[in-house]
Length: 78
Image (cartoon, rainbow, N blue to C red):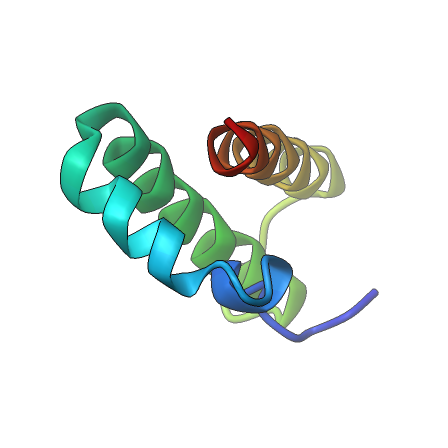
């Protein structure tokens, strides 16, 4: 288990300009990106035990982050 936050710019190297452009022009993408950052912070806080949550809740957060990341990837590929 990694305690390193999953920064969207590290997950999609070389896509920073496209991420910024989509965020500025697509409100749905901006919402997904904001939610990704929020969930990612929650996962990181759980993994580092800043926030203690049960294993099921932590797994659910990771799955939610993965679904959001998939949405981001699809938007970047379009």
